[in-house]
Image 1 (cartoon, rainbow over the protein chains, first blue to last red):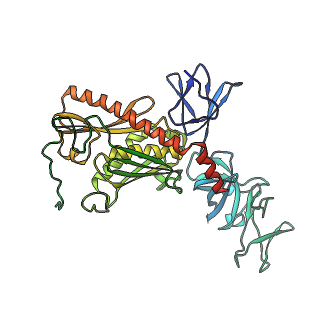
Image 2: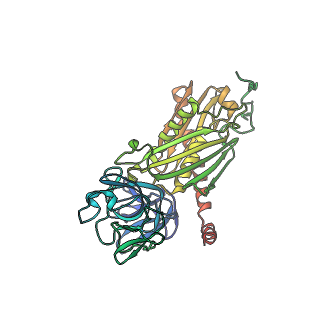
Image 3: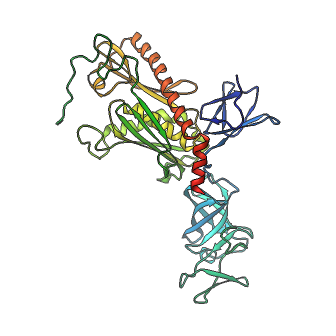
Length: 189
Length: 253
């Protein structure tokens, strides 16, 4: 069987080689000893490791998986949990948003009385995906880097600024408490 | 009540084995396939098979709604087949009919074995098929369009699915029926084949055939699907040749 060249276009179901020649990598599958392509993309052959894989032509579909750092908007606050909507992960936007939940015990290392002390509706948070076994996905904001990265005043709705470890409203001077991240205010972080 | 009635022609096949629309017995209708026609969808395809004009789009993998339908180990594949009100001779009611719901299910089941659903747990892949013009054998054309759209979306698949209808008219086996042959013929046998393993993923039958004729029909279907499969590959290669990609990148930049 002729080996297709590296970089050539392959379609789902195209024969790439046999199992004696390569190990099937990403974007391939093996059936009856023959390696087929899984997706539409470019072929990549690693002759050192003897792995053949297909690099996809279109952008990947990121699906939340444990350990990912995601950006989310707080949609609803309950007594001991917050419902958030995850929009992107490490700067890559999901094809559609996914719903997640932050439990009060996973919000901060410190003791928090009620959820309103940590987040408010409309805040943008940075969180880590804990587990994806159940829907909604469970998130955590424990850690210095995790937490609110953009918050709004409860009185007038303007953005809050971080001044000397406290969040202060630009317009009305209202002081608020949040579980904020060290990256507060840096949306591109 | 039908206002417009199709008239039955005297002969569906004449002495020289020429059919109503001038084709030979084993000929397919002219096929045109285009990939990536809808920029907002994750994947899309437009297919013309004779008088059939079909637009298919794929969205996803995305969050499942309603949420209780989500499956923890695999994606949910949902297929929607709809006919436009102007797609047939008489105005079709825009409400989803029994036939449309049935075809949605049939097309979905023909495509499902091709997709690696376990790669996308707790998500949904949605495929919408719109028939703009119908001329017999829309389910086969829809399967061809939908499998192209799925490949265009970049969803992991075992391979492409090609489908064709084999039938019987005036005692002879014919390939790729049109509307007249479908209505006045003696049998209709749509077959979908999943490449590259050449497995049958859909087979339906309506009419009367002998055992031998049935075997012949399946052999004819394998030959006809091979031609359609090559056309599908050609369409995908045409869309994803290097020049077009470079053009698209320039536009985005």
